[in-house]
Figure 1 (cartoon, rainbow, N blue to C red):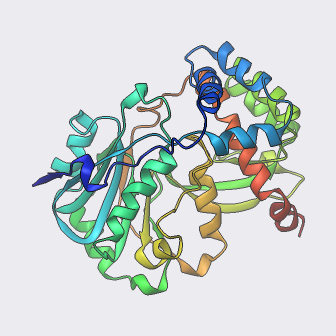
Figure 2 (figure 1 turned 180 degrees about the vertical axis):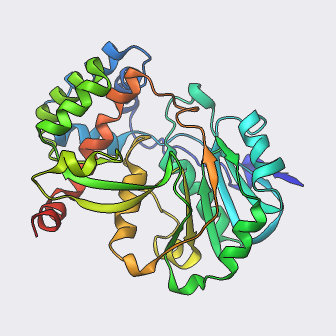
Length: 329
């Protein structure tokens, strides 16, 4: 059964229009550059800022988009929150008809690639807050672009063996784009070389922008991360990426805001995973396997490589002082 609540019921998240029209015009202009499919326009966006502080101010002021919540009825001990560009698209259909069939699902639908102010963190948070209303034991956030490996009953059975009161998060078996080993490290010549080898044009621009905004710390999932961090130390943790299981207790402590909404479609998962890692004794691992299609929604283009710099800047801005203490010890 699918429940599509109308706007009047309050499931649509309004944009705050209390600011002046001039403010929205300026944000619109900058956002059109930032979301452009032309890498040169994205570079022009960054050239419009003189410092990291100015960039952070824009990120915080940028509107968050207007999500639409659609629910699929199921058992509510485990609720799956799924951001999607199209509730009737092939990925969303696969989630509800196959991958998570039988569980209660909350789809948070956007306007797809034409959603001018789409903010992934805001959309997931909206779905998570809705999930809290049902008082589940576990809340899962999942990308819609997943594919089935293990049956959902494997997931349900293994979570029943874990006391949700004792854990903040549960990771599954690692896949290409979730539950992956990751490291926080300082940017160095090895890392810059990796950027150039992986994607020379976008990598060259990344290095230039890191220097412009004085970014020091970066996360890296590559199996070569430990080598690239040598001789400097790094901080290992498990990154959630597009699939993570959270206890209701943890989500309630965050008041439903599991993601920091200042991030603009990149970096929020690293931020959350790092926060979770600080209480390692409250992390569990299960043998459930689920696959993912990397980059099927937002793509893996040069402009996305460059666009992600904003998230890298905010991550460094937010965590630098603490990471300096952690990595130097």
